Image 1 (spheres, helix red, strand yellow):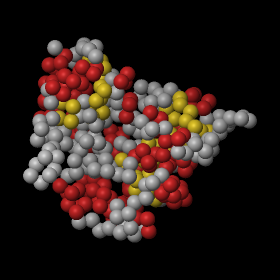
Image 2 (tube, rainbow, N blue to C red; image 1 turned 180 degrees about the vertical axis):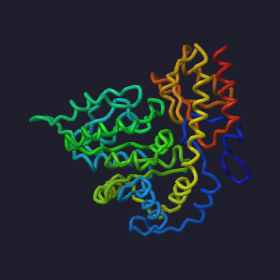
Image 3 (spheres, rainbow, N blue to C red; image 1 turned 45 degrees about the vertical axis):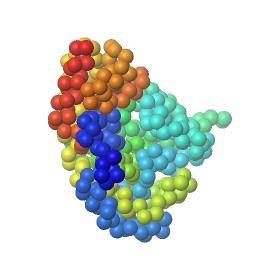
Image 4 (cartoon, helix red, strand yellow; image 1 turned 30 degrees about the horizontal axis):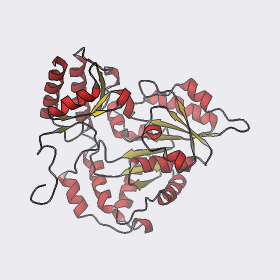
Length: 354
């Protein structure tokens, strides 16, 4: 702790934290905005900072309305249980975040049945498998009610869904009369990688959840966008789940700074991730699919026990995370500099030769 009672930063303790883009600290501009935020009671619709943020995000993504969420998990959960009634099915990938990293909330709290289809290495779901899974159920079967896709895809290494692929899923969904929800926690990374406005991605789906607290660097918060009737229902589900907010303009102010200042710089993170990946690919001790390194996430495997590799990286001041069978993950973000990448490259080379 320093003299002000604050925890030491990563830089102060000499660590390069590549575990996730959720580890970032607020920028000075975010802290100033939080301190000076105009606030009111969000439950009464009276927090002007939240209201402005919701309108702004809906406009940026080309949707009618938005609702501010404490977390991406709550955003996805609220969306799924709005689209689906208890006992209905959501069709999603077997490696998606909703299925594997959100505590089974859609089933435990919403009574929604997940039907998982295989996920390709690029994060897409096979269209033939989706076609089968979305067939109307017969007597005694759970009816499909929603298709959920993830963009970028976390556990596939930050891969980006192509616009052509999403259009194919859209066509199938329309044929079946189903909505599409996108877990777009890092949708701005996807837009940066494709070089297109984010609204071009969002226009092909019915609802999107995205996070302020990942690549955009805000300390907390997510947003769900969609049409007005849907968002009104999602807001009710947020209350049901305990996500009622009061003077939340304090955190929405940081999210607005993130929207204003952090989107244009995302390609820097992508370039640094690519450099890490290309270094890893130089060594037979590691294996990595460079085709999957499209944004700010790098996942690789090692001939050595990966828990040991994570420990060896930490000994050299580099924090990484083990994803079990998926491999070791490194994630770049705004607090990672070129010199940090240089340190990580040296550490990787030392471990490869150890």
